[in-house]
Length: 190
Image 1 (tube, rainbow, N blue to C red):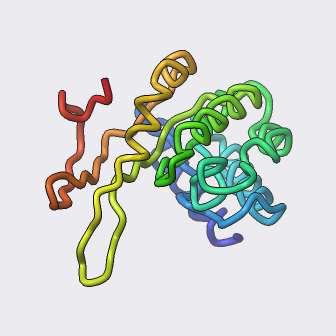
Image 2: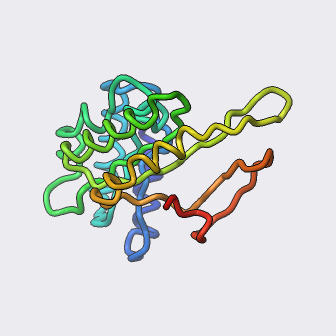
């Protein structure tokens, strides 16, 4: 953590004054909503703030980013008070980020619970990743549409909450995996 704090400090000192810069503390930083996960995020948030960074900080949820969509608890929700205290007064609200890879029939309801929980905890939020494929042996993929359907089913709640979806996109369609960055009509969920 000491080296990570130094790295964060160096990054925000170099890039933090740019208006387009947003700091993401750690992508997929832990498998559960544990105190260790919260302490890691707290350390990184404080490192940025103690270095004078006044911009936006994104915190990826626990459960490899999935929060309630992938596990029984959301670290962002469970440790909201601790994370907000680390963020300090007078700074932009933390953005809670989570990933939607739910592949089961309850994906829509789990995503709905995640949205509600983050709103109640006072976060702005973004969807950092959406997965619509399952990696199989032999470098093959199986298309899984439950995560995409979960987004479509919860679009009204996502819009009402002002959620952002990042423009990077690995997309599995018609038996092929492709990588694109940016927005286009085909990237829209409506």
